[in-house]
Amino acid sequence: MHRILFDNLAKGTLTEPPPAPDESALAELAAALERNARRKLGRSLSIRQVDAGSCNGCELEINALGNPFYDLERFGLRFVASPRHADVLLVTGPVTRNMQIALERTYRATPDPKWVVAAGDCALDGGMFAGSYACLGGVSAAIPVDLHIRGCPPSPTQLLKGLLALLQVDKAR
Image (cartoon, rainbow, N blue to C red; front, top):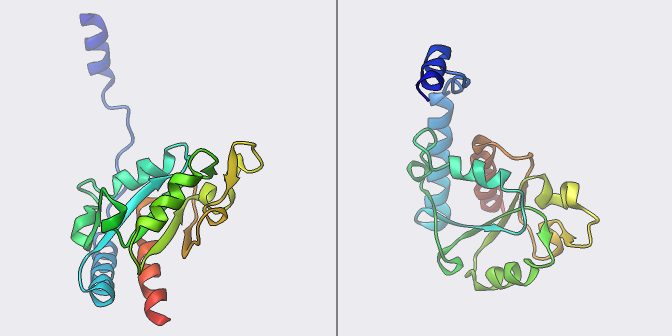
């Protein structure tokens, strides 16, 4: 046991260094998100995340939004536990037949005005699971979608840019 511990200490760190933060771009994105959320809703944007059958790759990136590096709440965005408190449904994964009814009920439980954001390539068209007997397809096969955020999985920055685009597009309507 001690030999393994000393060998590992002698090898040093084997992980990659974190990406260099682009603080100015992130701060600009944060200000734009908060400004648009406050203008559109008069408050912060509440998000209910729904996993409709994903591989959890997208959930890992969504979870990274809450770490100290991205700190989602400084953008005026927060995740809520109930669809009744949400403005946005952030849906990941292809819609499996087992999750179809639950997703539709969650959509109906979310008060208007609401937006649906499909995150990830699987949420767009079923991805690699398309055509499977257990998969209905993309999120739009079950509920109307306002925005697709591409990527497998989309990075936290892509997710933030997508939410900003949602607020800006809806403002233009």
